[in-house]
Image 1 (cartoon, helix red, strand yellow):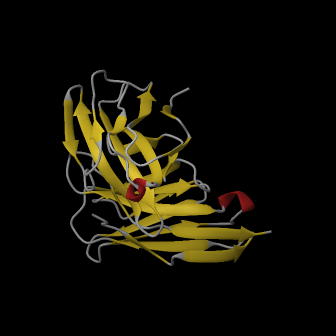
Image 2 (cartoon, rainbow over the protein chains, first blue to last red):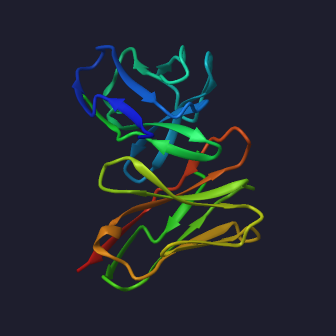
Length: 110
Length: 111
C-alpha cells in the first residue's frame, strides 16, 4: 500500500530535549516536505527536499532541521524544542503537485 | 505564507443537501487542489484543477476555477455523514511543488 509513515503519532516532551520525528514513504517520490498545522492558520511548510541531499527552508523553518540521506526518509529534528513548537506536524511526499500526507504527529512541548 | 482563504469557516448542513465552499487566493497559480481532513488526521487529496481549466468533476465533487477572480469553489452534492471533515484548498504557484494552504472550512453533516 502506498503510504507516508510518521512516527511517533503523539509525543510529549520537555523544553530543550532534542527529538526527531521520522517520516518514510514507499512511493519513490523525489519531493518531500514537512508542515505544521495550527488552529486558524492552516498548514505552513517548514522544510522541503527536492531530492536526496537537497533540502531548503519553507515558510517557518526556525527551530527545525531536516536531512535527506535516502530517498524514502525525511526526518524532522527539533534540537531544542520550545513550547511555541507545540503543534500538529505532517510529513508529505509529492507526485507532481499532488501531496500524500502522513497521519500526523501531535507534539506537545512543556 | 497563507495563499488561500476558505469561506465560510464553518458550514452545517443536513444529510442529502449540497455543500459549497469557496477559496480565494492572491497570486498567480499553476494548480489548485482541494484536500479533506478528518478530525486531526492526515490530509487526503480530493481533486486538482489546473490553471487553464474552468471546471472539474469527480464523483459527487465539482470544482470550479475562476483565475480572473482568483477564486475556486468546491461543491459536494448529496452530502453524507461521512463528508463531515475540514476541507482545504491548496495552490502551487511555481514548479517546485510547494503548496500554500488556506485555513480550511469545517463541514458538519447532520443525520
